[in-house]
Each structure stands twice: as structure tokens, then as C-alpha cells.
Image (cartoon, rainbow, N blue to C red):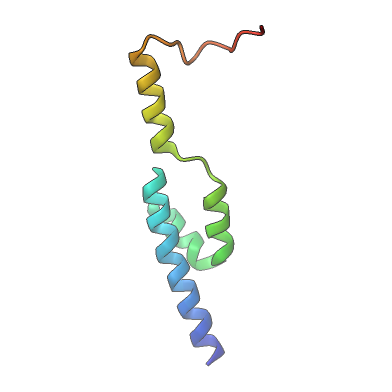
Length: 76
């Protein structure tokens, strides 16, 4: 019975990690595997990862407004 509960938890974490990775712009297969192997710890690690899709979108918006995003910030 305990093994079945553990397996269900691992499969749920596997699914959730894959879906969250897709939403953040990461490859979902690797996160599916990590979600199964490490369960909730993989979900916590994924929550700490930056959102790649929004970073790309914000960079495109800044470049469209003429802001040089690759330049180092000025020290004022």
C-alpha cells in the first residue's frame, strides 16, 4: 500500500514537473524524469528556475524600444 502511494506521488510530480517546465520554456522530457526520480524536490527546483519565456519576451520588448540589453548597466 505504501509503495502504491509513493508511485502515485511520483507520477503526479512527474506530470506536474513536465507541465511546469513547458510553461517556463524548458524541455519537458528532462523534467519529467527528474520529477519521477526526485518527486516534490524537482518541483521545488523548477519553481526556483527563471521563466525563460518571459525573459525572451521582455528582451524583445526592450530591443523594440531601442534599449541595448547587452550593454553593462551604468554606475550612476
